[in-house]
Length: 239
Image 1 (cartoon, helix red, strand yellow):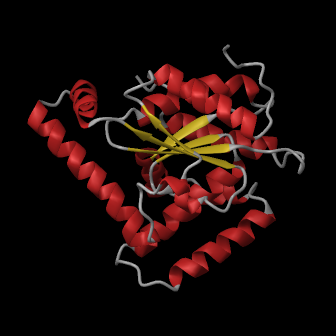
Image 2 (cartoon, rainbow, N blue to C red):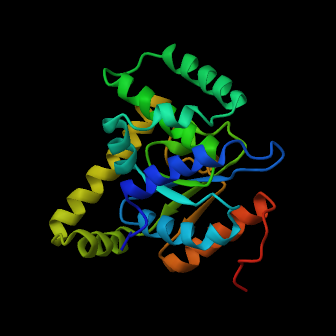
């Protein structure tokens, strides 16, 4: 279902960024964050969105999806930070330092070091551009970066139960328990580490109800909005 969401794609993206080097400083390297209710289609929409936007990427770049599991895997393997640092603009580095210093002044839970590594990774990926970051508080972490577009996906509980049952082959009680635990974990993560309400509409450019739109149409809606927002070539729009 998500053929283009895998560790190999992520590491290839990092390598491509290194080879491509610094783009024209006047150009925009857009990035997208997707926050979602569990079962509202976050990974599926992200996968379709990367394919939809790819025709607009400049030579040498590829829209790549990093979901929360892949970010965790890359962190565990210690493969990311050094490579990303080679192409991270100096202005982004200074903003990242400011963000981290402000975060350290707050009293964080015991796992703060892991969160700091996640923040640095997410920030670097977003600053490099042409990524779709799913989860991990990416919308809050990158809120000050002007090249990032923030989306929230929602859906009814019933439809989300059906989606989780299908994707994970869960029975209904297991799907309901999984959805509740995942939604609560995401909510607490943003509240505990960033003091943000994940349901606050003001931290997103827009919110999409996937009950009312197919995943294909949702991906096109987001893609067209991103192309318009950053004034990218709109040749790939579907009328």
